[in-house]
Length: 151
Image (cartoon, rainbow, N blue to C red; front, side, top):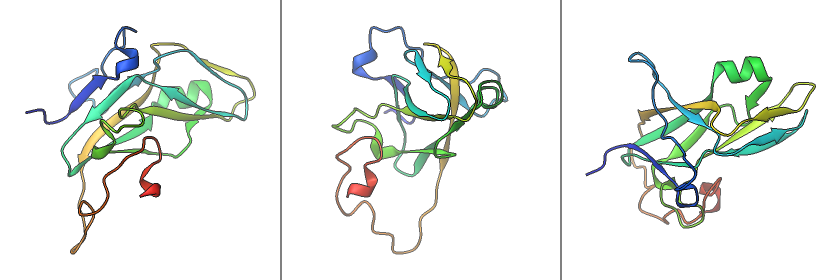
């Protein structure tokens, strides 16, 4: 039985995508790279595809943060400060659970993200719920990116 990990989404199976990995024994985050080149104009945002989906236990979440070197050197920030990848995002019908990194360019020049460039890091963690929480007894997720507000 799979506990938690990463897989390449179907449309990138032959693109040479590498699964996220920690670079040292004390690293907390798994590095995500861009699946293809993206240019972000000054003052604009873009969803950068990773070609990756993540599976985990129902009581876990994958939190996504920008890599500090990406933020400092390229004048980029994560649009939502911290990305939250829910366990039921994996395998959804709309986009298979494909993780995109929403970046905003606050610099004065366009920024090029190369295919294979590490841009973000993901950290798996458990979360707690309140007494009487009924989530999980209602509708299942049917959409992809940003779909929990549609239930």
